[in-house]
Image (cartoon, rainbow, N blue to C red; front, side, top):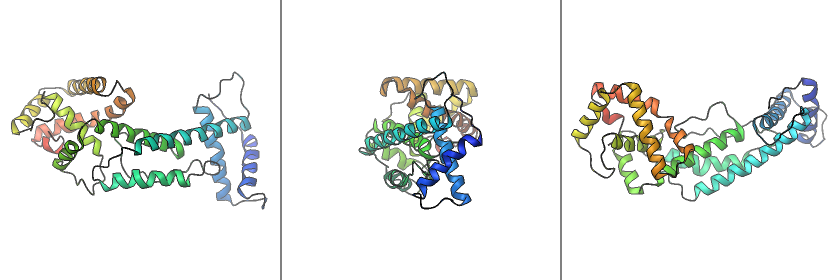
Length: 278
């Protein structure tokens, strides 16, 4: 659905929203506030356009699009908060302060202060914990819905392993586990894929020969071949261990292009330990 409106259709909506904003105590607002409210109107209209809540062969008026979009936005807020509430029950930050602070404090702050009516376009928090696939070109509840979904994927992925095993792998990573601003799940994902590549059991302790074996495999493979191998192993893992969760697969797949490049460079300079913790 592609909804384009002229200013004369949008200004009355902003005027009505301004009345609610000032509780009808003033007939005017500042330029900054007027711009904020225009953005709020457009955000809701875009929610209508991007969603599939309306099936109509007729063009919606701006007022209708705003109404339907606002309703869809409220439903998205409720749905995202429910998803967060479900995820946080078993959340584990694995000792990373940034991860814990972002998920346990910042995200609840978003839901506490998010203004769906007057500033739905505002994301409120900075989302300091970096997900494997970044939340780009999104704001407001659209960004938070995606962010919560990505973190949920990570928690499910890591949750399939015993916590002490995750702590052990993260403890051997060269990043600062406690104070680092890096992605925790990426370390575990690469560890798992590394073991699968050399056909070594997850709980089998790795040695220098294992890194040499991985180096040889990477050096003997083209970038395309290595990418295909990793993608196949990840697909198989998702199929066998995560009930064919294709959303999780797509999310984790985002790291593969970077991983291939880093592995090839690491094999060339014999520093694979800096890329993958076996």
